[in-house]
Image (cartoon, rainbow, N blue to C red; front, top):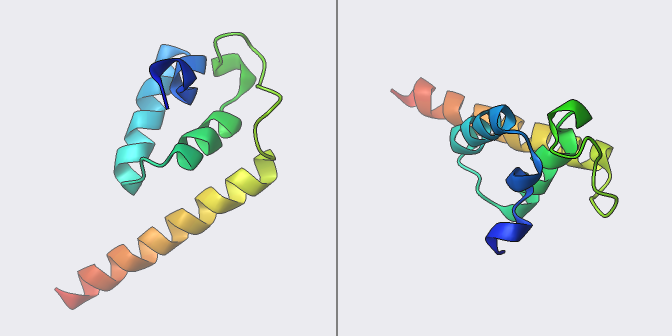
Length: 83
């Protein structure tokens, strides 16, 4: 993925910070996760105020993000319980 193709380039700078925080908090730097964050971004936080037409369905992307976060929370809780 080249710099011109990065989903974050389609977002306004304050949303960059939000997405960076989410990416590092979940330790997920996959391109699919970046696309899901772009889909979840309100149009008011996009550079051109419209969502790209070729992205995946927002419902599916949001579901994937919720499942990933749930799994990570369970993993974190299991580690905390061990200590």
